[in-house]
Image (cartoon, rainbow, N blue to C red; front, side, top):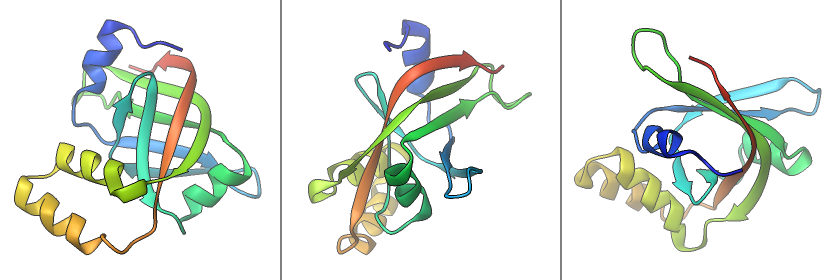
Length: 133
C-alpha cells in the first residue's frame, strides 16, 4: 500500500512509534520505539533476541501506531500489515534510525555500544492504514 503525500510528510516527524506483535498466547505485545520509512515500508530495529523479533518470526501479523496523542500531535495513524524480519547487515538501519533521533555525539556513543550486537530489522509491509486522530 502506498502512503499519501500527507502520510509521508507525517512520517518524516521524529515521533515515537508503538509496535504491536502477537505473542504465543495470541495477546498483543506493544513496545514504544524509533522508526524510519523505506519506500512504503515502516522499518524498526531491535536486538535479535527480543520478544518482538521472536513474535514476528512466529506470526508476521502486526501493527505500528504513530502519533494521535490528544494535545500533542495533530495526526495519528495505525499501520497494519505483515512483518518481515531481516538481519541488519553492517548495522545500516541501526545507524540510520539512531542518527534520525539522536544528536551526532549521542548516536556515535550508542552505535559504538551496539557494534557487537546482533541486530534485526522488522519491516512492516503495510496492508491497511487507519487514521486514529
